[in-house]
Image (tube, rainbow, N blue to C red; front, side, top):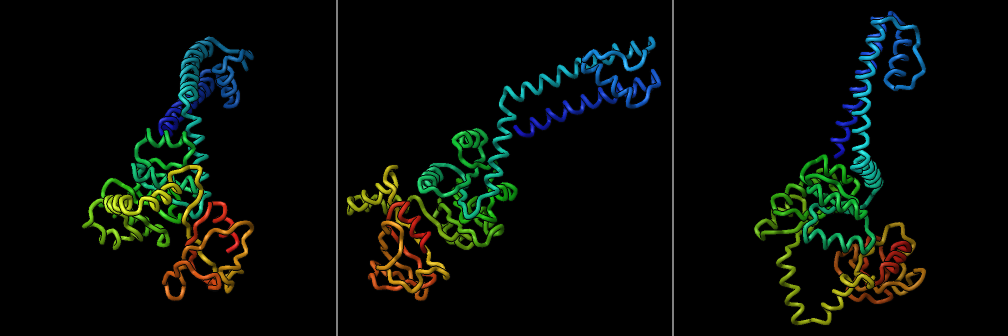
Length: 332
């Protein structure tokens, strides 16, 4: 769409420029006028403003003027028709909206990228948007990309395997990318490309065939998830621990239920370093600390005691509302 608009506007500009050039040169040759007088006469003639002749015209000059009027009317009519078509089709507004969206993407940092919005990508998108995380979508299908834009989502139209498309998503500033393309080969290439652009980006890939798990890991995927495997575990859990599964499921599926498991890292300069868990200073109610991944040992302390002191680099696994978790992150 953007290329088509650029092509139309270029055609209009070239035709108008040609008319002005022909008119100016014609008056200079036929009437012997100066360049400015010839240009001025051409403009008022093509514009049909009726100001009158700049200088008296002889017969050859009037014949040339008739020719210039007819040519100018044709070009002007064509120019107006093209501009009207662009406005009626909404092309100009679409281009402006896309430019604004690109500026929003350029301003993002620590955002997430979803490549391919199939069934898995849709589920990921719902979770990220419900927890108010910034996300950019790569969509190859033009119609789907336009539909997502109308929904107010940040979308980059193109093939995720192309470097130019990845750059437009802000991959160098992103926190993570989800490789959810249709096959493992494409996900492998995407994982490699993402790590080349940003070695610090976290890559989570969907796995279609178990034999490709190690290859995805070697190519840069930090985590590899097999949908059939997760589905099998879910089926088994539904059978043997239905209440627990129902509780966890309600946190994700129920839009009004804002509770989540989340991780909160303790920064080196945090004022809470050295303070026991029981004395976390949080404005309002604090989320429950389910576990602590200790920075020194790398082990998990499950259901840690209140007297356990926080250390720089510890990661808290907490359960709470999105508001409670946000307050804890701000405090830590």
